[in-house]
Length: 264
Image (tube, rainbow, N blue to C red):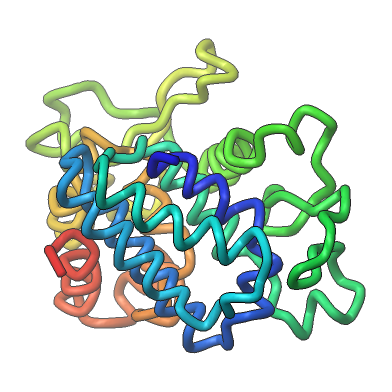
């Protein structure tokens, strides 16, 4: 079982994880998973990060059936043969796991899930546009990571944006890493877009704090990951970083980005 398979396993069992972990433990687990994304393509660094992810799941009891067995065997497999996960797999896993409802919500009938040690229930939702849970199609249930990844991209492409500025123009920044540029793989003819939050509304130039953080996040190499960091929930900041520009000190935003990419 390699790292990509482990991520798919966590997505499939997200309802169980939310039942076994309290809110604080679950946030710690998500923080470890963010560090896995920061590990990039280095297999040894990714192995250390994935081991930390699995160890953060210690509250899952040993009698939790197939999930507990998979977590134990997964840690041994990662140590024996380190592999770096794909950026898309980590992004998709984060999207699904951030959206997983708590045990209280799951138990209230808001979502159909799995009971610890019980059989899978068809129809576990995947993340829809706006962060809601939507019923997957038949094809999506067979590959939950691919389904969640597609939903994540749709969500990121749905935010206010502008046509990507030509290279060398003020709106493009001084380097390719300055501004996030996204293209819809399902609609190549739509052209490249840049999320609007990155720009000064008066000058049209990229905001200094955005440029600084985009460089930290290597936005030219991983634009989807950088966009997801800005537009997704952030436990450390208490909100989506893009919504906090100008509301919290720039240094705090930059520190949150550095915390993601620095080694443990």
